Amino acid sequence: MGRTIRFVLLLVGWVLAAAVALAVWLHYYPSRGEVSLYLTSAVPFAVIAGVLALVIFAATRRWIMLTVGIVVVAALCYTQLPLWRAQTAPAGEEIVVVSANMLFGDADAAALAQQVAAADADILSVQEVTPAALERLRATTIARQLPHVFAVPGDQALGTALFSRTPLSGEAEVDDETVLHNLEAVTDLPGSPGTRVLAVHPGAPLPGRTHIWQRDLELLGGHLRSLPPGPLIAAGDFNATWDHIRYRDLLQNGIVDATEQAGAGFLPTYPTDRPGGRPVIAIDHVISRGFVATSVRTFDISGSDHRGVVVSLVAS
Image (tube, rainbow, N blue to C red; front, side, top):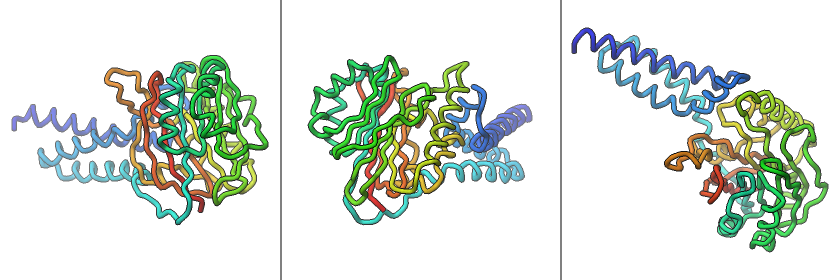
């Protein structure tokens, strides 16, 4: 191997290892600006850079560099490990929660209804619900399967709806300071009476508006921490990934991420309207307290830029 080639390879290896170290730092950094926020969404892909760096250091016989690389890659894997390690769920009747984003109300309501029926859902959280989209949803089988509805529709991305198999009470908006409607109610679920259910949609981190994203997540976190003890399910488009510490800050006082509980791994849901249709980041979630998630899966939604999420829960 020529000296020049070896030098270039080592330089590439160090750049890749530095990218992995940056990914680990971003996992714990409270993103504020656009660059750090968007880069944090890509943290899981840094594993690829890490593997390439290790191959380069091994091929060039740079053992000290290889050792450093192994440590950095191990640190990155440690940040992702909770999503791949399943918890043991108790026996009990399953409760199925579905979340779907309708992209300004344009998603195919009938196709969504088929997914809801196939999942035998008990709770459905729908985001970006316009008045026209709400009427289309009410005209599908969702209205029979989940007859109890609390909805605050709105233009473009503003509206949100919560559908339930069991009666809802105490319907209210989470916080009228959030830019989008976030809803909550109480319902009696099998094995878990008095469960508080939320349909959530914090503001997106659009260019020049990341402060709104930060504020909405802080408002949502403050609201969750203010709630009395008891079973809780929150489902929706959180506009944040596992690697955003502002999302993980929501996971307090016994609230846990369903993907983490089920060990479902990396399940990207957005965006599906890019070339190839393959989503690259996981921003749609179900979080809960008083439950254990047994499975998490995603599904395509015609007309939306998100995949939907289906989560099975058992009361703990």
